Amino acid sequence: MWRNGAQRVDTSELRRIVREELDLGEDDAVTVSEMACSKPGCPPMETVISIFPAAGETYLVRVCKAIVDVEPMDVLTSLAFGDHREGFDPTRFL
Image (tube, rainbow, N blue to C red; front, side, top):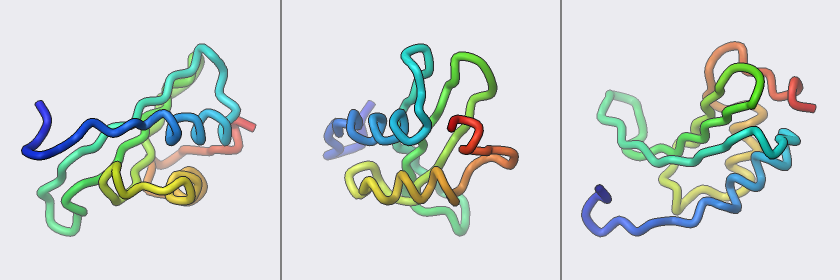
């Protein structure tokens, strides 16, 4: 269910950037979701990019903005330096 007044956002461009930057194949999946957070110090809304390589571990990359506010550079920065699980190595996709 969508929160009050929320509109569906086309995330295809964000997914395309992730696929291109990590050189993902047809069998690899990428999802983009918006999540609310009520924990202290957490932004009220964050965008979570989930990367599901066909072979290997799943990785989550977070952008501390609502989906509608995420710019391509936010995605690139999060992939390179962002808030993701320890052990994430984007160079393994190169």
